[in-house]
Image 1 (cartoon, rainbow, N blue to C red):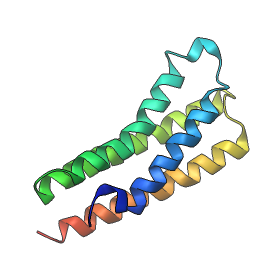
Image 2 (tube, rainbow, N blue to C red):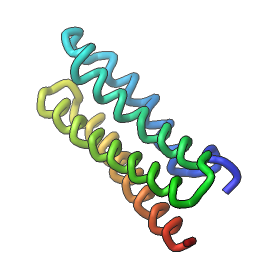
Image 3 (cartoon, one colour):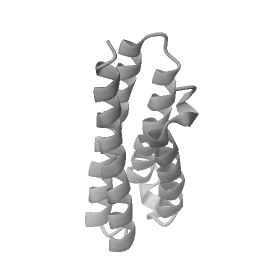
Length: 119
């Protein structure tokens, strides 16, 4: 691995952040400091933690940040469901984002397993 930018999971999570910012623009204005802010923060946290972990000195540190990214991804999944249940997200957008969140989660779990096998 050269940098975090070479990781497919980082690229996919960056793409999903861009998508969720677009989707959340249509959320109710009274949710700007509630669910809108929270869902965006979770989405941003995933690639941010991957990047920060990749810049760390040890494999163990990298794995710790990957776990944080995985936790943020799971939190993001939960908030997507809440937004969908509140009819802030339509079914097509929800299904599309949920599929991507699930894929990113699997990729993070795989990367964690791979990095664990290296020490």
